[in-house]
Amino acid sequence: MIKNLTGYFILALIIIFSSCTTHKQITYLQNVDSIPSGTVYYKQPLEYYIQNEDILYIRVMTLNEDVNEMINTFSTRYSQNLFQNEISLFLYGYSVSDSGYVDVPSIGEVKVIGLTVEEAKEVIKQKVDESIRNATVIVKLLSYKFSVLGEVHKPDVYKNYNNQLTILEAISIAGDITDYGNRHRVLVIRPTKTETKTFRVDLTDKSLLSSEAFFLLPNDMVYVEPIKSKTFRINIPTMALVLTTISTLILVLSFVSK
Image 1 (cartoon, rainbow, N blue to C red):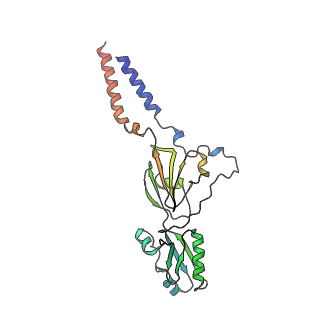
Image 2 (tube, rainbow, N blue to C red):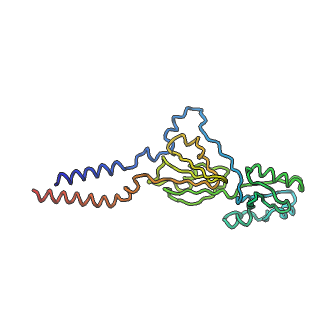
Image 3 (tube, rainbow, N blue to C red):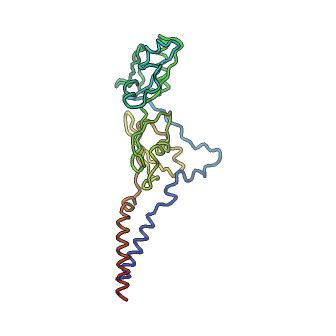
């Protein structure tokens, strides 16, 4: 009986150690050093095309301050604290209608759906030039949000105010992947106007750098799967208690058998 208990004890130890996380499992881009010197191994950012319900920042600037106040939806003199929250975005941003237009005061409706932000800027500039000379037009996408969920330290919906965002930056913003996260199988879900695309990426492999999912787009969702042994690791305290009980029992039986 003692031999059987000892065998079970050893088997349990083997299972525990075999489920331990290795250095290789938690290291990003492990084979990136194997890329030959001078090789360009980089995916260009994808163009984002404006969709309905997007919110744009549009500002028309001229040398005439009165004209600026008339055209813009907010005072250009006191604009430092704008766009700090969702309410500001809704009140002062330009929402793209279901038909794909933005309505700019004193300028009129401009169709921007299906255009890049830079293309939308040019179209709005052409419309502005019809009535205002030497005006400068600024257009930015305000509704650039992305989600990171699953095995990260701070799963949440985040906003990005840069022109581009990589999946590594997104995961960094979410506090990095937990010890239970599977870096070999990260899912990127990309909703578009006509379909939802999905991408599987391996954060430990250099192929990530050329993946279509390396650069995120607005409304992308990043899901980090748990490793298969997560349930086992969660139950380790219980198993440790069982093993302690077994070892104690073995010692008691071995003492009694003497």
